[in-house]
Length: 332
Image: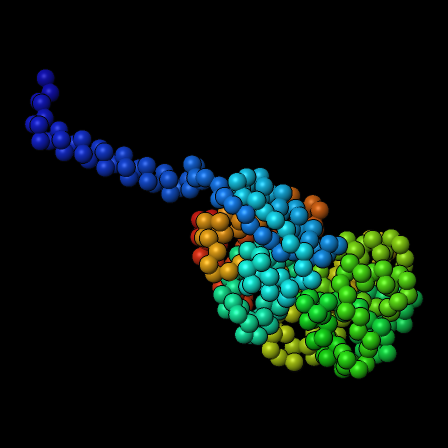
């Protein structure tokens, strides 16, 4: 017959068992952080871009994924003129999250505008490719040939115009004197080229961009190489370090029936918020962005480049605490 435990020993055993149960419960909660948590509630505004651009399409598809992943959260999309406008909307409280190119972020931070130093990143997404579009029989073979031409350069609050100004300077073309700049976005530039109201236009976006695809179906166009400008561009210094040499494959736009790849420059896109954004919400949104890559990538091919291994490289911005928490949770 087994000896009976003294009363005190039985109490100690019970207390030890209770403590162990609590520890195990806490451990299970830590390992399964979403097992019983509630979805963030309320409204969130997301600034995207012009209707026919990649930002707008990406934002609309991400909105669908967030509706599934965070059903208690209402996500409202806001149109914008591009990266710089997106950052302005973010820092003035009109948007909670947005997309912007790394060079635009660096320029905005250096401007000293209110709230600029409070910008934080959630993820590095995909790269934008600089695209100079002309009629197929145009004599423009490089940015240097744009002197005397009417050129679509993007709106004043766009990342497109920011890069265009730097590219033209690197090419020895004066933005204000050597060309006739037409300050409109990708929603208008293709139509102006088709009507003959401009001779060329610059666009910075993911591959492919729907507006360029559509134009290629309506008229014969081609992309002009910009690869010869990467060295003089970097020689300008400053935030030009965010530009890298890139190649647009010949089949990037099947509508153009190109036979050769086109050398150009590229710049990374970031998912951006403010330092005071709710950490839990930021963590959940970052998770959805990474997990939605394959589904969104079916319709926005550039989104296929979103990669967990590179998402944390968000220079010039530090990661938001909530985003960092997500990456730590999936770290091998």
